[in-house]
Length: 346
Image (cartoon, rainbow, N blue to C red; front, side, top):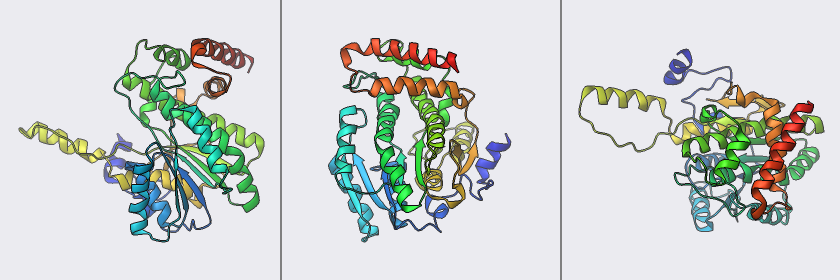
């Protein structure tokens, strides 16, 4: 109840920021002119605002997108406001592991440093669909593509941080909806990748929980490597959009009024991502979950290191070039067996 009241009034937490803070406000003292950032899902919504604000602060942007036309339009909008911004548009379809590999190869050919990686892109698939790699589409786009993208870009980020002395930042955009998932993650993924028991909301919650667990295990690995790179995840909040409703009746008006106060504008929703990606106050902060620009608690499942390691093991198998669609279920069974054996050995 107290947290809801704080959210409603936009009360600042330990960071000094709260639910009503905007991306521009939380980055007002940031100078990013020497930094390069990759932002997925930057052609609309929260991602577009994140890109706009980071460009305003001087960062070189790489905008990957399925539609180069849409990405070029985003680039034009940013340049119309900040003519000196450096923006590179590249093709990327996160639902395709082959596309992720091509993107990374193309990016590496530019010989650019990489300081910030914001895994923002996401989708909510109302209808069941399978990726070209045989994985349920929501999970493939929201999590698995980002897992491989991060894995392939990590060497560059570690080297950039070592050469420049500037700590690298990886930000995974998740959602409070991760707490809605319960049960065996890998078994459910295997089921929905064979079109069994598909539920759009549960599939989305699974992918967002995977984002959280990815952050936990990646943080552990970065610490073990003594890398000057951090990984954190954020819940941006629920964005204010055009809502349709029947305006008749006092109760309906009251419900709409109260609900609208819990929603954020796009600039407010982008604030936590921008804060975690840029704030000097978060130096060496790693493996944490943020909401309203302050550290918050995940679900019980979202804080389980053993589950995070199991998911990582399965993910490594799923993105392996040796994996192929006809043998997908065998891959899942192998993932489950190996992950369980590993967790029992801990």
